[in-house]
Length: 243
Image (cartoon, rainbow, N blue to C red; front, side, top):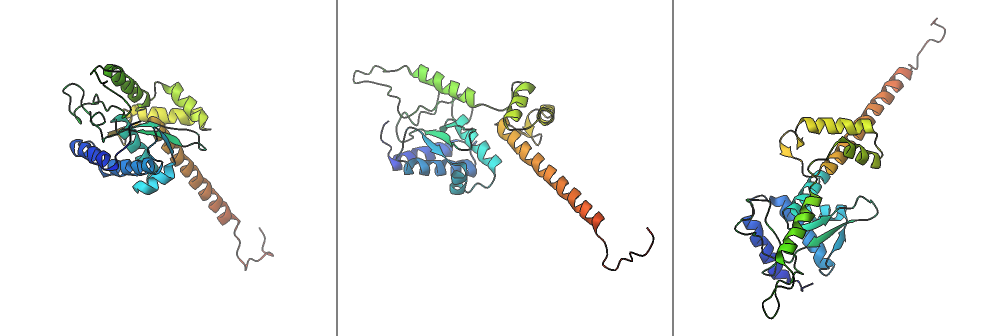
């Protein structure tokens, strides 16, 4: 992998930030946090991350916001995100080198960034030329590879209800709750609050599980409190009085 120049990379990526109207401060904060971890690990090809650590660095307090932003940075080709569903093994990140001319190639044909999902960012290890000017590897091949990675990571909605049921079972939830989730979001067009399009339905499903679990705990707490109230007796009760 070509050595990373700290200053050139940041200058390059912030130049891209200024052109991309889709980004908000949370995206930029998250990217800077990931860049710092990449720097701490001496700029490897890929590195593992800990969600809590990244959220602390980026000052993101919501897990839902974190998952949405990292998926969007992946989808918009600022990095490649390999999520891990194993709680004992962190997700992996692959960063691109914005400090090179190839790393800043955010255009495909005449399509500008922010106007289409078809823009391409070439990974820093791609060598697009030799001493005699001939390409070592076809650029089109790399473009197709990156497109395939994007399509794999696109999780805006499940294929069918069976995929949702299987996912819920893996998370130790029954099929009844899976169908509730599927029917609810299918009915509103797979949008959060009926407005914003879902980026990662699995992250949305986990959030559904957390809320459902909180509601169940609250109901159980209310039931326990009611039972305690029914069992309370006064200290001056007359036990000689007939029932």
